Length: 278
Image (cartoon, rainbow, N blue to C red; front, side):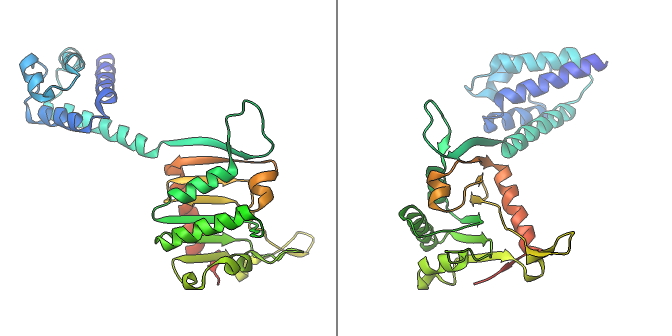
């Protein structure tokens, strides 16, 4: 009995695996089985009425034959539920799938297929339609490449894209802090919306080492995410060196895992680990 059950379960997954991308056809077949219009003994005419010219007649015939030979005891309701579960599982797997590309900064390497950090950063920002998350340790706006990047972010803000910046708060020798660097470039008519800036909360900024020495925590993550779907996680700072000169590497992830990144920062903000600042 188990062998027959396994055989029919495979037949269900095989059918759905082949037709799931044609959601209309998949839904029609499941509905026809649930309503009794397709049964284990249905012939070519009944199948043609459901397929309505779509390819898959042999595939459907093989499935109905497997039902008859391996699981004849299952009702139409049983079989339609099995197919529905298989279809839902397929759709969930597609929703949670993701594409990953390697991204890097550094000298040109012959035959390398990895993409350049600067190009990917600009592409992610340009394609944002609703929101952007920009997380960084160091922002240096004194070079043309970073100025152009800030200009692009300003243009997206003017389009109504909500932008959240999360920066390390430390001042660095020979350079203004990240917040002043950004504010100096940001137009006064966009000071309030739709831009938000976050950093360590005052309570969590300082930490004490085992030896009793107090020091500042580092907000060292470098992340850009567009629309909770397209994320770059990289070692590169938003500086000329980070985008063009250093040896930096990261991954661009398109799919559900990008949303997981944003949700994590949402939690850091909601739990007051990160706090808003001007």
